[in-house]
Length: 393
Ligand code: PLP
Image 1 (cartoon, rainbow, N blue to C red):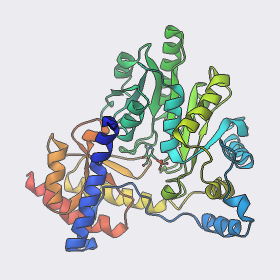
Image 2: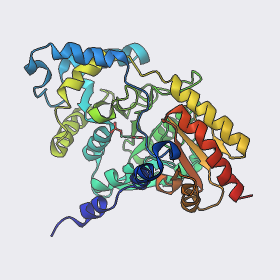
Image 3: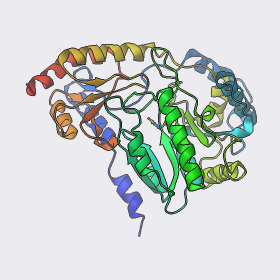
Image 4: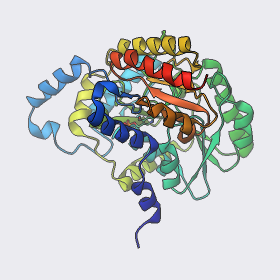
């Protein structure tokens, strides 16, 4: 007998991947320029030049310095450079022992879930949420509880959160800037959230950890600030990734911040190491540890995303669609023109318009538009959006 759970997960792909695969097939049939594929969150801007230069420079170094196994939590010098950068930018006082290098946010999150979870534990998150959270949380034997969004701003619904928190809550997961809504939690939201978690931790006489999933931290527009959570809540674990900020999703590199201030730090830190060990996520890719250390405060040129965002919002609003204005990431959440978002997306496919229904993100009636695409894709898609709108008039 094999694992039924793994069989189930592996034998069907995610809706996003299904739509993407459909897009590839349509592009082969009708030509790439005729298909408006907004399905996947693959960065469309190149990595900054500093990444290329860092790789070239590293190739001149002795092979054993760039391709060998690093210590399990990562190279100490790399971790120190990351800690120093966080201290400079966010007024923190981390050292290398607070940083654990990982294979991207997926690994960071899985390690944190595994390190914290015991049977019967609950992890709470907020719709709309990254669909993989469910299989990762369930994969460590815990349960995912979902709080519906506060509408129309997609900030936190605190009444809903208060109802869901319980003595079984091990951690709350947030993702800001958010995939799929593009919303950034305001300072007011963060303050209310952290106050509520402090209050509930006291009532339950146990810490509720806050896990913040931050692959989009650097991708924000209009100079909006993304509060750094460790400054507001001592029981915060930060899961960071360079997949989007440096446009390096295929290189699998990121880190976890494990602050000294965590309740039970002396046990959590080894538990993170143990979880990484059992999951096989030790010694993150050596070459890319060195690369990110050399580019520690760089990002790609995100102005292209902002231009795409503005173009899309202007075009869709003019056509009569209702959109949630994204303040970050490269996703736009748009109201479907009928209650069933999946049916709406099927109708959109007729015009080779590939949108992702919101159901898998935990809420109904919206679609996600990933605008990390070429400018022309957005410009040329407007006729298709117009035809789709006409169907509903
Ligand atoms: N969390 C969110 C919200 C994401 O959007 C993604 C990837 O798209 C991940 C985690 C996984 O990121 P990584 O490529 O760093 O594993």
